[in-house]
Image 1: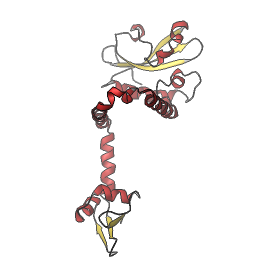
Image 2: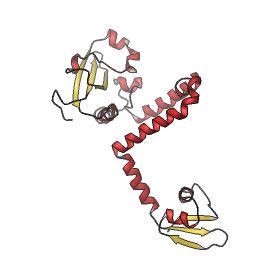
Image 3: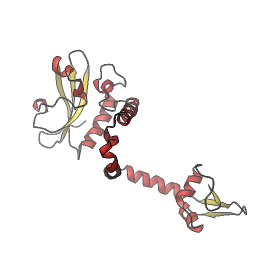
Image 4: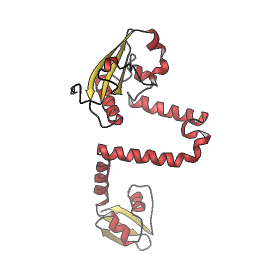
Length: 220
């Protein structure tokens, strides 16, 4: 991981080693010229277990200085670095066992299920009574943010590429009543020919639907 000069970095990766052999890793925005003296020692989720920070000796080490467009990019770098550097289910990893990051995919999935169930039962987060009415707007904002991220990371371009590839294959429509078959150069051409929905035909092709507008569909 490339180290940057003291002037052109925005975030940094760090690790905190405790005297009992446990460790905590994280990423932080730049808060000063020297990360070792900026006073940042862990996220709020980790500090829920603040007794470790209060009563145990520890040492902070800077792993790398980063230049990132935003914190989500820095977090992605941190996650990839964690997975490539440390073993999953390491008993000394505070991140893994306190659920403060997605050190392993199993931990992330289980943490999401647990948190979601707790939110429903306790009326927290989106399930707060006073937030139920604004959930659609909030979700819409989240979708816009996710869409922007997909564009920046290239995920949207890749998804479009795959979609075009799957919808440009020749399609055969079969009239259910007459048994007549007609081949079309693409999914959209077939949908236009029967004044139907490309999405509905796509579901048939994926085995999730039986017929549409009196036709079945399959790839040629």
